[in-house]
Length: 311
Image 1 (spheres, rainbow, N blue to C red):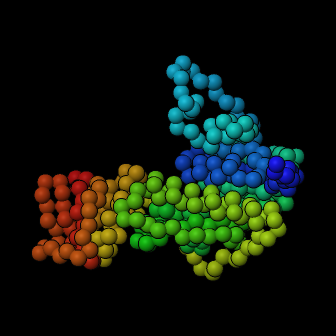
Image 2 (cartoon, rainbow, N blue to C red):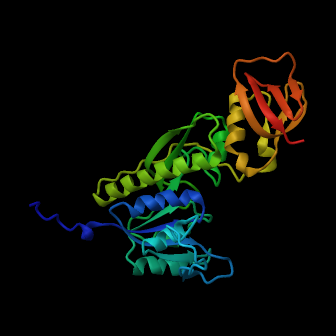
Image 3 (cartoon, one colour):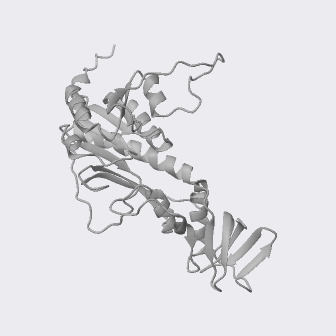
């Protein structure tokens, strides 16, 4: 007969999780639910005119159809409810109320994956171990609200994720863990986001385990880095000195933005493109552009991009 296992509940970290209802926040929360932590609550952004901090109650189902799961497209809210975890909505004005709540609940560390607002100092100081943020880039590169867009825009061959302790700066603070992620040709933005979120969830669990055991060490972010704002229409421009592979991967990875791509050829012609169909890094055309109905082949540097026009 096996010996009884010791009860480690007293050693489990009390954790709160903050994220949005978007897809990036879901895998990290799922990883925490499967980990040896005590998840106190999930916190999502509240409406501007709502109370600063209020509980979110499960919505009764209106359908009479039997479903294997009560939610067809679960978010972190539904996932938390399914596991009996309390959910709260916090607004920008929730600083003092949320800080008091965190102290009252004896939350030791807050984990963040995709939060739309800067975290004020009153909150960063409200828990003994601070706040850990999951950011989908290898900081200090690509700070800001859309790091995967700018990773693809730069033509990088790898993406990455970082777990860092949050401070007063945006995507600043010392690094707890970091990992690279290959960028396969033609990967879509949602697929890349999910791969980063899943990898980040694993790193977050490993980081919390090191924190619990008292062996977590932080490293300062390297000097320099970059901050990029939310993309504008002009950021969907493809220059003639881009390689065909870079243009193809950028277009495939940002297609869900549904913004036409402005491609400037070496001859100075401007094309509006809707979708990338393929590329050949070794091909050369006799002229800068070849057209067939709404399909164009464009000479880039190097290679040829095949795309569908938006005109």
